[in-house]
Image (cartoon, rainbow, N blue to C red; front, side, top):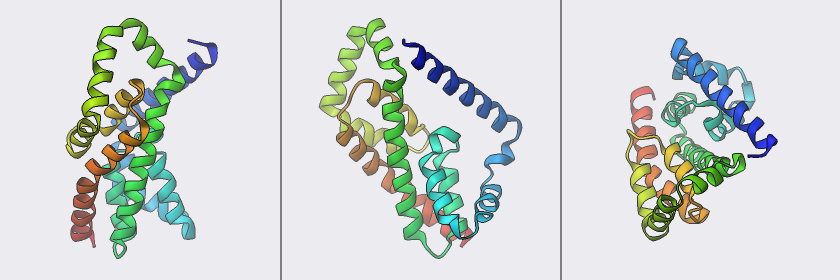
Length: 185
């Protein structure tokens, strides 16, 4: 691993651990009501702020479900907008995560340490990858971020990966938007 990659990995690790500790000790920071108040302070830029936070979600470690609920609270009469922004946020943030492992050089590390297992997983993702990603993404109790790391590490074709994430996330996001609009609208 090059010095730049080591530094990037160290920064990522410190941020991840720091934010995890912060959210564990102060869970109110990711409470949808508090996030709505923070975004409303942006005034007319509230929509832009919502889009930026949705896309940068993997950096902030805020779960996408929380952001979808925030969207329904911010824009109760614009559920289509919340759906589109949420789906866009999930797809773009999934692509960021997909490429992140490679930037850090972790794919090379896994490749070197587990070549036979990597080949098998690559084969599975190339043959059934779309449906594996769809199934993973549609299941609400597992983090979509995990399949993003795996797909990126195993170099699954990015187009196929993002289509799988989109197909899998559409029903989940629609459910959350409809439920949030019904509960909070």
